[in-house]
Length: 535
Image (cartoon, rainbow, N blue to C red; front, side, top):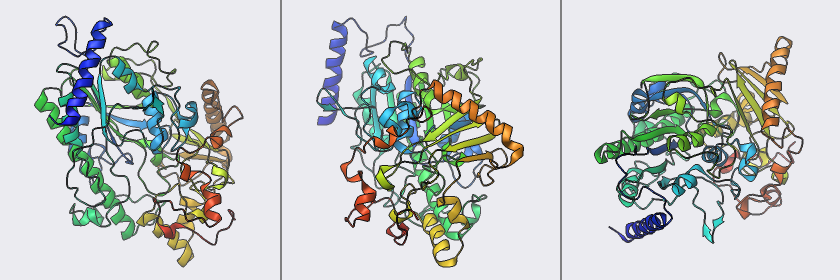
């Protein structure tokens, strides 16, 4: 056992000893025979993967046998959504069981994480679970400190084991090997809660890798979304995205094998999903159907009744934290966590009536990436209900994907982004640019059952006036109950929260004054230097 393992093992033994002195059983030794052993919890989260991009949902050009196994042996969820389609705020919702607008600074991207809010992992750790993560945890942002040490929202990181990645842009972290190390450091019969946070399919990609490495062909793609040009550049970009999803799935398969090998598979609740939609224009960081709708499969051989089912009701990321505490037998009221917006999915797992089943889903956003004047965000609230998506854009005079003169910084640089921008610049074809980067009206309404790409805005169509009013009233009532500052008239608080990284603060003003600062997630030719002051 290496030095890192010895250190973790020593910490575990001390924790067990303290627990025994306090008369508390932490699961550090054998579980008494009269007690039912608590389940392990494993969440596997891809970085930027949209619904329906797995084989289980019928996507043939992306091969995901491990995800498909989870779905086949568990439950496949047809309408799982994140409340906020960006890395840090989405993960904040998952960790706390609350919507992003209920999380103060954590509503934003790259924030300070408020000390007010405990995470489910911290709570489970205090109730005897071994906790930890590999890859990307809660990020980007600053978690703060506890007793003079950096706060571990998910427990300690296990990232020492490396592999030779299939491309230069895929992470060298050997997620499966790190999971194995984690299991070796925990108590023999101690339940665990582990987070496998892949860095794929986050950008950048090695262009053409899906074809060169994955043996894929562009004609395999059966649907190029209507807000992008159907061009070989875009299709190649999509295949590269697919190849990175498949890397995530291969690591997932290895983790499942480790669980089988160690005898832990049957008693492990396994959740496989993603944090937000794919890193392409009009998806990641926005609030459309393709942005917030995510893949989700859950398997738990000892706990799921009638596996092989599909679940059609809405599920929110805020439902995960209460579910994990529920299956672990932790009293929510005494957990120290702030009041959940979400509800436990345990009734769904057990195939019994769920009195908290959702018939609508509320989504939204505040500030994501840098690049607007005064560090402003682009506030949105929306509701999905009865096959429709209604959106309220609170500041329609702002650029939804970020200002052109700083490079549309809320859209990652990519071949697809560059192609759309160049169509307008050099070919006088602005239609796709308008859909992906142009300004938006204050209200949007889409029939997502027939228009999942959200191309036909029905908000100004008189025949939908009553429907729009009903959806807004439901949205408003829900947000008032959740004490959302935006709906209560003081949403400017979200713009006043400062970025955790000093280099991100006042980015727009510094960039426009000529300071040599760069945003590394875009291509330099994304910048529109002739656009001045949002004209």
